[in-house]
Length: 213
Length: 250
Image (cartoon, rainbow over the protein chains, first blue to last red):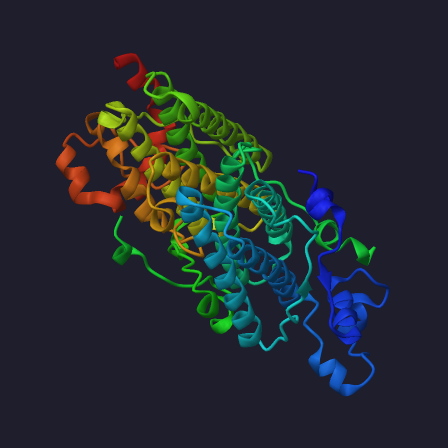
């Protein structure tokens, strides 16, 4: 898929505080100071270091997943509020919203249980019209799910802990189900490839946060 | 498959409280003795893919489906055939010996469009659980990437077929916020009906997945009694050796 076309390439993440934005950039690994800097503990003030979201290793991967799940959960929440769906479509999409919310809660809990700091919930703004019609909502949802699938699969070989791998895989499978159903609802191809594709974190984050470039 | 049969657990080297408890990932733990190495895992997967591929090859030839169902199941059949090829080649790259196609008999699965789709749905969900249940045993990261990629596609299949059947969304199309792994012995017990048709010709008892067993089971009841344990030991050897014999007899 063309992940660059999500939200027509427009930014959806904004930050209430510059600190949040800096933290996001740090764990996203898209700026020079990046992960190595954080790993070295050289984060300026002590309080900032303590509050910084975990960026490296499995905790970093979980925070990456958490950000995507925040996006998805928020997206479906907004979409369902817009009351665009009915009947079977509503029945099929409502559990997806539930799943994404559960993923947010579960990944947050997992990060805390492992002694990490979960990334803050991003503020999200969508291009006008995203929830203006059933067609637009479902089309964007489909892109989102395909992106989520490739994101999880991109991390599979990087995960160290078997527990995190199991958890991530069990979530990824659910995202695949979502992707297939949304493709079907959009009149698209539920089975775009015989093996799921995968994408790097940088590619995925560019798709949802083009302003980070 | 009963959920009570599932043994929840975690992978060998994992600190317990991390993701499993929090995520309720239901990551199925197979017995450590289930797989000797990556080739073993892949041959397990290959056997399941052979079963699925043969299932759709036969089912799609029956002309039971129309419209979207026909289109989708044709594509699913292609996916499964691709998986067979991809896994076979991966095993060969690793220096292993791929098992051969098992002999299969799908009984009344193709009696109607509904029975075909219902069996398909079971197969796909079993495949999803099987891959997740075995994932923790894969050492090679490339193999893991491929296996995970196939796992995701099986999940797509399961969801779409569940939807074609008009099943309720949660519990039919989806199975909750996290997939559930299934242990090897449970998977093999689940697919045994498609193999036990050939009980009279089925050799079991070999422990090497590459074959070599010559012990035959003459009594279908013995298979039922022995259940998963017998199949666990013998299904792959059986798979490796008996496609031709069945094809010529059917």
